[in-house]
Amino acid sequence: MGNSHVTVLEINLNAIEHNLNVFKSRLLPETKVLAVVKAFGYGSSSVEIAKFLESKVAYFAVAYLDEGVALREAGIKTPILVLHPQKINLEEIIKSCLEPNIYSVTLLKAVIEAAKNLKVQNYPIHIKFNTGLNRLGFTKKDIPEILSLVKNQQEIRVASVFSHIAASEDLNEKEFTLQQINTFKEISTQLIPQLPTKPFRHMLNTSGIINYAEEAQFELVRLGIGLYGFANDEAETAKLQNVITLKSVISQIQTVEKGETVGYNRAFKAAETVKTATIPIGHADGISRQFGNGVGYVYINNKQAPIVGNVCMDMIMVNVTDINCQEGDEVLIFKDQMHIEDLAKRTNTIPYELLTAISQRVKRTVK
Image 1 (tube, one colour):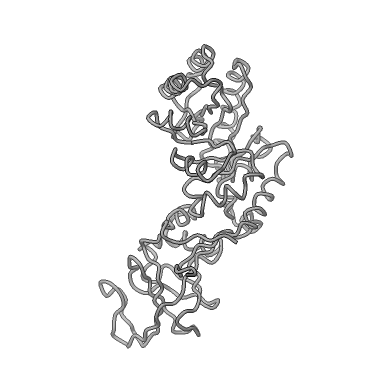
Image 2 (cartoon, helix red, strand yellow):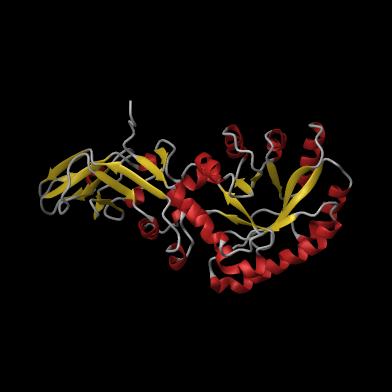
């Protein structure tokens, strides 16, 4: 039996490679790249992306233990940084050969303990410093305690020291960002010479690579949304290729007479005779109810078809009055980056949210 799913998320791997190279071209040849594949590869497929990039990047990063385990089970051997480990997961993280981000004294003590219990030595961990995002991380005043804990044991070694910029895409915040970078440099200068082995440093995300490659590329950069075709800036996004296309088909075309209504709560009322097309994708697939009532639109035969009435759980209806189309025709729910950016603006959100909302019941295919 062929592919029974008519709604498909298509992932263009060649576009991923193109995007990786665009960012690499901004970096020194020796700077390593970590590819961020958390949240199913920003809503695509972390396994497919990681398999494809394995020979092209130095590291992967995921948010949680089970995301890392899924990559290991798929045969990925590259080092994987777990960005948000919990104390309760540390032994599992080590057993799965994953490398935890350590962001507090409690966690540092716990990871040394976990490594002792598992009788491992020199296990790689990553030390996160908070330089202004105020989300996770040690502060400068923790350095003496970090050193006293790390120096007196053989169980773990600090593989990297890192931080995260709060507003790398916003050049109005340049002063704050440079302050963050300087704080991180000061911390690194205090900490690194006193460690038994020399860790690498990383701070830049996608927008950081675009705006601060001179100031803060260090030994490694973390590339997330940029890989998937978005650069938080129109001119920069234009240099990237589209990775993600969400497609479906027309199930049925209806003629709705003047005065008739469409969908739940009769949210749409026809002011004149219209033609609507019903498409098998809805809010259970990640098409938010916010797109209803003309806010969102899809492409059918290169024309925009606005969503009519409320988004249902498994279906949307769109207005095709002026579009030459028939049942079975292809529908582009997310056509390209410009389409996704526009839909995000219309619903007061960002492309990240639209991409990561695409439900796991939507079949992924790679090309």
